[in-house]
Length: 247
Ligand code: SAH
Image 1 (cartoon, rainbow, N blue to C red):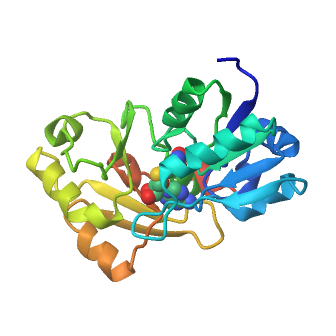
Image 2 (spheres, helix red, strand yellow):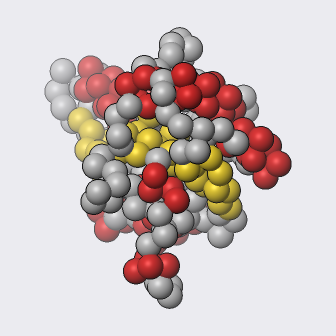
């Protein structure tokens, strides 16, 4: 099939519209149709006043747009020769189905270009002055989702013993499983945890806790999705140079 049109798969970042890339802004400026997920801050739409905007949110437990419908919508507009932009929260390829959508479109003769966005875990940690890696403390970082379609379990012992900072996405409803898995895998109950809700948005909230106490603390705090968990020694590290930041 002839490759005729192109769909942009754009990462809109975690929420703060200033965390958009220049490339995302350029692509939005060219778009005629924009399909927007509900984790995307609608403020970014100021960069595409010319475009027709269609909401295609899929939040767990809420009214949702089936993935197949989104695929077909992108295909229909692309085949009409329209410049289509698909806006996703954070980065399109971090728990964002970006590659699935690109593959599906490629199978239908439509090329895609993926534009990176700043993923929520990265932004959330930085907003709370937590360095995800730190010399002598954390020599790596592991991004995991607590939510799987088939309910399969993570390899908790490997995660607990990895010595890397763990950043957990979609974990708010799974705090007990995460705690039990990591404790069972040998992680200490005292391991510091930061839970960051609505990272980079004006309504951002942050709850500091420990692995053993995080479920009770999150309940008392009324932690809600979207939130990320940062689990590791870095969650308790005070960074004077970061804390001295003024803006
Ligand atoms: N592609 C996105 C992740 C989508 S999965 C990215 O790269 O960030 C959805 C999960 O991302 C949410 O359940 C939550 O864990 C996390 N998330 C997205 N936006 C967030 C935000 N502003 N603050 C905290 N967590 C967020």
